Amino acid sequence: MTQALSILESVFGFPSFLGRQGEIIEHVANGGDALVLMPTGGGKSLCFQIPALMREGCGIVVSPLIALMHDQVAALREAGVRAACLNSTLAAEEAAQVERELLAGGLDLLYVAPERLTTPRFLGLLERSQLALFAIDEAHCVSQWGHDFRPEYIELNLLAERHPAVPRIALTATADETTRREIVSRLKLDHARVFISSFDRPNIRYEIVEKENARSQLLDFIRARHAGESGIVYCLSRTKTEETAAWLAAHDIDALPYHAGMESAARAAHQDRFINEDGVVMVATIAFGMGIDKPDVRFVAHLDLPKTIEAYYQETGRAGRDGKPAEAWMSYGLADIVQQRRMIDESTADDAFKRASVRKLDALVGLAETAGCRRVRLLAYFGEASGPCGNCDNCLNPPRVWDGTVAAQQALSCVYRTGQRFGAGHVIDVLLGRAKGRVSQLGHDRLSPFGIGADRDERQWRAVFRQLVALGYLQADGEAFGALKLTPSSRQVLKGETGVMLREQAARPARVRRGKKSAAREAGTAAPDSALLRALRAWRLGIAREHGVPAFVVFHDVTLETIAALRPGTREALRGVSGVGEKKLERYGEALLEVVRAHAA
Image (cartoon, rainbow, N blue to C red; front, side, top):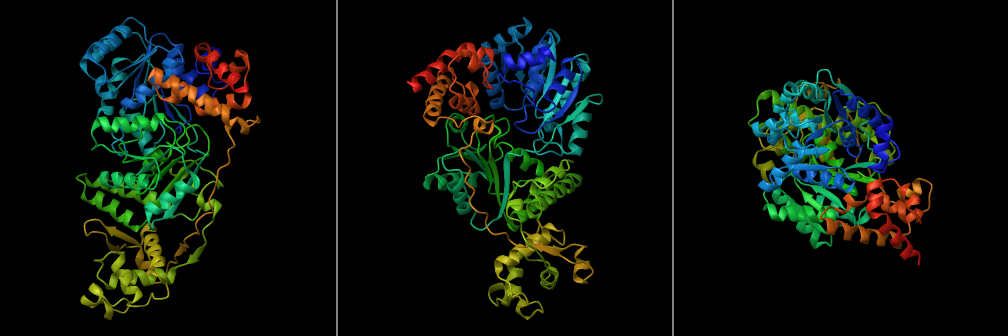
């Protein structure tokens, strides 16, 4: 491990490994296969980058997104590593030059898309090259049950057949037990050692609120807690993405839309602004995000319910990659469940896939409705036991639980008496005794449940119905436009054999304002000098523009904050700052010291 630690410090500028990084690197560097599950921001990339630098030959990295390739290659080159990528953005001569460098042994790491890797031309190129290892990033894309399935990933099993002596490492941040088994089977990693790090992201605060006026709720959230900070807002449709971005922009939030239906130039321009500028909020469909390496995303918000816990975890994990406090916020209502069930029922997938999709949706709804710690529920889904986190809305503002058995019986009885053909809105009108419109036209004002729920208001009844769906006593029929139907388990509630405990809607949590405590102060040093920090960021932006790379590729915010706190006066002092490797010290050391000296003067 002496060589690995030397590379870690001299190339990447870090003093020690995190978690199981050292163990993984030693195993792969010695020729072993591995499956690595590590949360976003946990340092997965080093687990294959360092072994590739330790072994003879070039490390081939399979990556699903062009944006991810470019960012990682740019960061590696800044650190002095001979890295390149092969993708559709390269001109023919550029691609040919990369191929020549690979054959001549002039590359340490080569990033390539899975569809290119499996072409006969590239496979022939690999046969003539010296290979250090294969790294399969975002390995959950191989799972047909997953949220990011990529059919071309299945063909990657040929690497085991063609290059049995070359170690392979598959990496992902999201995989439940079923997905893990599928990764092992499809990629032929039967003899691979499995490394599972904690899925916990303790710096992320989770909050899920009842959807009332989602856009206004989102605006309040951003203004109160993240004004002027970078964030991502996820919406289900392209139209909603554009409308929400325009609405936020009209309320003085620097917001941009992003979805697959936009012209590629506009989409690329918006992504470039988000990555390179401070305080931009990207309003996007799930087409945006995977492989985005921006470390200072301070919040991820969902205006619509994701499909699965895996998708929710993957998307919220894009916040706080720098380890500093971040938030995952979501608004959620019964209509979200109905919409997702309708999408499942109307899909062309087979019945087995639909059943699996319903189970995954039920697990996510359970997370949204739990009265306990959200982090405990989230980690339990991935098979990890934990205790209350103290950093989610339920821990900070514990919801009260009440005996809702009578209310549940009234609700279920009304669904049954109205024929199990109507959504929550109509059933609630009957319970509240509203003899108007379709209620009177259909004669539902003469049914026995009419008016029996008048002691509760509409908002309370909506919470009851939402929780009855979450608890499995009602189901939303996707084919009948959200009609509520009784499930077999509802019979026990109606007979009084099963009690039903429901959660009261928690009061809105107090506005939490994060202090300006930085990573440097948490480490026991002084707070960063804000004027010096602004000067360092301005210098970094100039370098980034000059090199045509994102600002964080030059130095992360945490590195600049530490410099602004320590105010190093010598190259030796600068060498001790995390994130300043030998190549960057050689390239930027004097310029950084000059910024510090100029500020002192």
